[in-house]
Each structure stands twice: as structure tokens, then as C-alpha cells.
Image 1 (cartoon, rainbow, N blue to C red):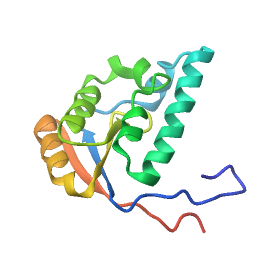
Image 2: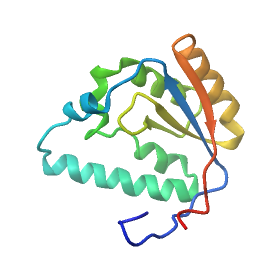
Image 3: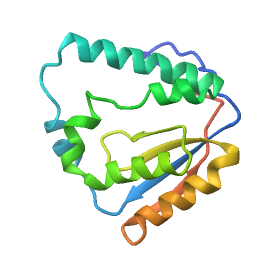
Length: 148
């Protein structure tokens, strides 16, 4: 994590692998940002902070229950769902294929899937079938050295 001047490494379980499903149809960042609500209620913020905690601990432990509890960003994903229906399809496909977690990557429409290394081939195959002719699937590597 970086706050501008300081940083600290976050633990990442070595059994986790990351896959991106990149739709060919772009989504402009300005359009994605415009879909966000100007004000968010406290209950949604509290749920989002809890999801973030589950995500951090899930990335450290590769615990499927924690990573499942981290799903469902209602601040960014839900308001943008109608802008890129394929993104929701790809999230569902990744989870069906065995991903522990899947979410919008940034403003979208790319999907980031997290899986146990032993399940990567299944997740990639399921995503490839879901996106066929509409984009591509890319395995990702993680830079573990951090900022220097």
C-alpha cells in the first residue's frame, strides 16, 4: 500500500494466480466515473470496508471463504453494471470456472480473476469460452518487489 510518501508491502499467498479477461469493447473512464453516485450511505461504506478487509486477508491466506466475502463491490461495480454487461458475464464465468474472486479491474470493462494456481487452466478456459470473439484472456504476473 502506498499513501504518497510511505509504503508497506502486503503479504500475498504464493498459491494465488491472477487472470485478466479483456473485452474488446472499450469503456471510457469518464463514462465509468460519471455512473458513480455522488453520495454513498454509511451502510454501503461499512460493507465496502468489510469487503476490503476480507480481500486483504484472503490475498494473504488464499482462503476461499474470505475471498468470496470480498466480492460484490456496490460502490463501483453495481452502478457501472449497465455500462458493460459483458463484464458481469465474465465475472460469473470466472467464478463458475473456479476463481476464488472476480471483479471489475479499475473502471472496467476488464475483469480480474483470482484463482488457486491449480485451478488457473479451468478459469482461463471458462473465461476464453465466455469472451470468445469479444476479447481476450491474459494470465498476469505479480510484481512482488514493490516500489523502490
